Image 1: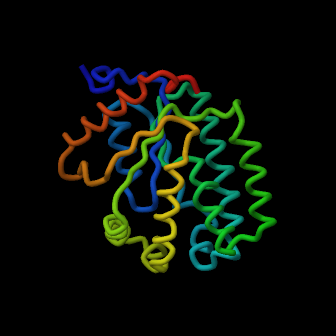
Image 2: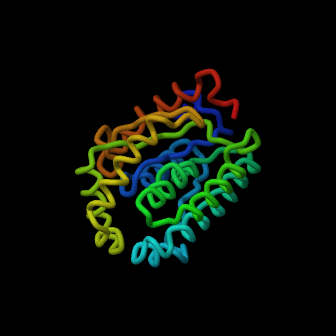
Image 3: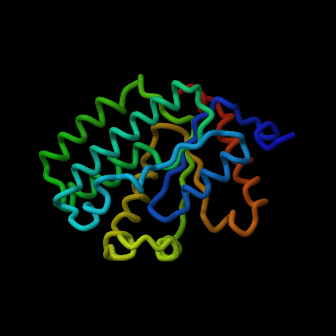
Length: 222
């Protein structure tokens, strides 16, 4: 018996992995998909036409970046739903408005008019009963120190050159965001509770928790 069957995880489920930059979303997404026989949906970073420009000039490019992410994630969410689920998704669409766009609006690196336009579009597209919300959001959590260490280890130059204050601000906002999030069921996992690079067996306890959470009433009604 495979782990999906062992822990009663339906093959039509849509599971999203969320958390701040460098927390290990892509690694967990790949491992879960492989073990459960699910397909993957990754955040598109390498081909993003705005990302490098954004890190160089937040104020000039924040609105463009958020609109790009909103469009791409909405299209991907629709495709996964139409394909019948069976996906592990790297990063949720909710983080864009709840974390990044709001942070730039609050800090003045996105104008009030641009933020109002973005939020209006997000609400019309996503915050409706017709939008295919995930059956479960896995939130990867950890200390700020551990997350900064992983960012440095990953070695993306544009991230390494970003001021520490930016990562501190983002970390605090993630903590507040997940405490208030209610668009779908949430499973919190501490990044120090597993090590998929050194111990593949540490994945099974996570899958057991997924099975328990997703089997609860309402988790599959989205």
